[in-house]
Image (cartoon, rainbow, N blue to C red):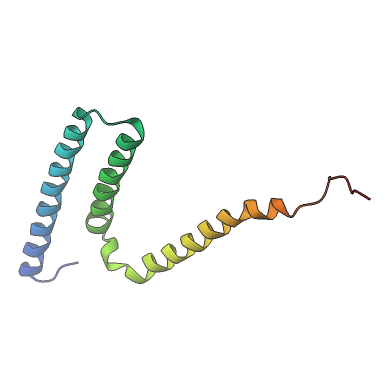
Length: 103
């Protein structure tokens, strides 16, 4: 918790700034919806905007910006898991069970 009034003022200012940015990104979301994009482009734009808004909420309101070591560890574990899952289909190429053996 904050022990000094100056720290509280700084936190309130940060929260208000993030709240204003969330409002701006909401307006951008509505504006992007009014523009006729192709479906893949619309999904990409919507995901980018949602990721930015979600990142701000997680970092500031959930106080995850102070958890850097934990966040980096989770990110590295996720990247390793993702890479392993990308290479799992390659293992099926070398699978010879159930195939006829030619002589």
